[in-house]
Amino acid sequence: MNSKKHLVIIVVLLISFNSFAQKNISKIAFGSCAHENHPLPIFDLVVKHQPDLFVFLGDNIYGDTKSMDTLQAKYNKLAAKPTFQNLKKNIPIIATWDDHDFGWNDAGRHYPFKAESKEIFLKFFNEPKDSERRKHEGIYTSYMYETNGKKLQIILLDNRTFRDDYRKYKDEVANDKRYFYPLDYAVQQEADSTYLGATQWKWLESELKKPADLRLIGSGSQFAIEYNGYEGWPNFPLEQKKFLDLIKKTRANGVLFLTGDVHYAEISKLTVPGLYPIYDVTSSGLSSTWHFATPNNNRIEGPVMENHFGLLTIDWNKKIPQIKMEIWDNNDNQRAEYTIGLDEISFKK
Image 1 (tube, rainbow, N blue to C red):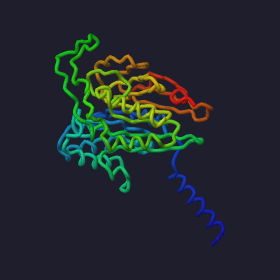
Image 2 (image 1 turned 180 degrees about the vertical axis):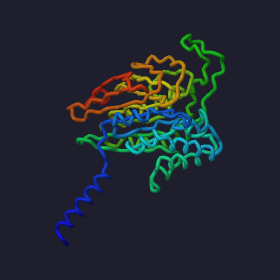
Image 3 (image 1 turned 45 degrees about the horizontal axis):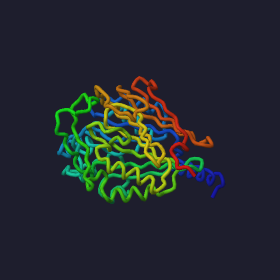
């Protein structure tokens, strides 16, 4: 073979290999609550910030239907948007769901079309045919990236497929004067009530045992907030405690939550004995809005009520990597910033 042609082939192969090689991840954008009827200009702002990855945290469309044709049509409407096409073209995307794209408002394991909606979800987000995600019930999954010898694990939970129903709040309003609105759901104290289901809990424990420096937990529902009478992990305090105890048991360093659902942004910090602080960055409102933020004594930044996206930037080059959490609004204004060292969310040696 001609040496010049041989060199050309090698270069082409190297370019092809590198294009499929796993990219280092240091800048992650994320968000939730994107209505398919909205133009969603926020996606163009995400692209402008040039993240390495975008994470959809649920309510990626507002299906709210028992017709799979309707659900598919709403995904098609999102897919046709120029701003979504711009995002998809320029930024790798991973995703989990929440109730509205699962299929029904506040739905859990009793939603009758969860297998069908799962297939539509996986097809829309181009899940490979041989993916482990297709081999088990629900859509939970994880990803591992490596940068400068440091490992980033992203765990995307499924807080719909296996979750028991919330217990209705029976009183008109709460006795606590902080709650200036009617509460939907009461605290669920039954020992056999579950948020993730036995199989997903077992899988999660095995994931937390894997070596990683930073672990981002994607959950449609907020984790580190106070109970507020709406959906969230604090409605199932025994399940919330189970997660915290699992972090302690596995000695999993670097756990930080990315959450959505509530139509505003905030950063919460949960402090419990025997564990490092658990931070929860809520980005909810790619297109949706809400008229008030619920009481949350764990809130350290926010709330941001305008449309926005979240941004997490990791400086892997520092001796102790730094994690910057940000909220950027739809006018490209930074509305919240909070930075921690990776050592703050690690067990002491």
